[in-house]
Image (cartoon, rainbow, N blue to C red; front, side, top):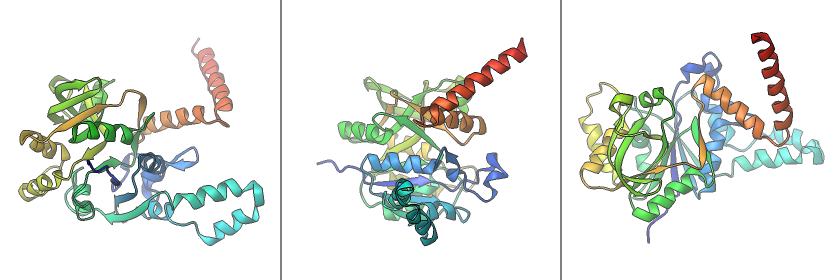
Length: 304
């Protein structure tokens, strides 16, 4: 019987320079979306798909992430308990965070690039499939993206890339793009992946974003790639995936069509995400919608 993934690696070592000076002391992954940090949405989606062990690969400046997923301090607990029934929902929420999963924290060591977090956590993964994802971009979909990747993995048995179709030209300079033979609607057996090809050189409109499900064969290829890496440029996962494909290992693309992709690593996209989450919030949504409509009306009057 095919083993389902129960472990995930979250890459969270970036400096967040696009959000300075805000990220001088606060990790970008801890920036809020309404009342939860960005990384918590990522963690909750993984847990919903059956992930039990989450390895967060960070850096020396990411202690706030560890603190967030730890047990709350006694002063906070005492304050919430003193609030009685009124604060009981908040008490339940903060106590539940530490029990979402088994958390392991590692500091990233090695070359800059998106393959390094996997290399750092390889000794913890065993010989089983696992999820690899970022801490500042994610899909909101039903079912969740991890469940969709697992579904494709269980159908074909190979590694799976979460993908979306490019909507803007600049996306071809941000993500890896794939080509291959369609297996069925929304699923492609990948024969080529090119990182940041530009629109003119992209093999298709299907970009690999946010999340991967890797089979354990990737570790041998990761080690070979690291041995031959000369230290120049970035140590990237896409050429390693291509080497697996070239040797006949099955790699599949799963187009996530029944949801929306959010990239909160960009200031404007972060603001858009905040607005979307606010509009969807059961308590805040109506008032925020009214405010936005009022602002649009005011701007229309100014432009006339």
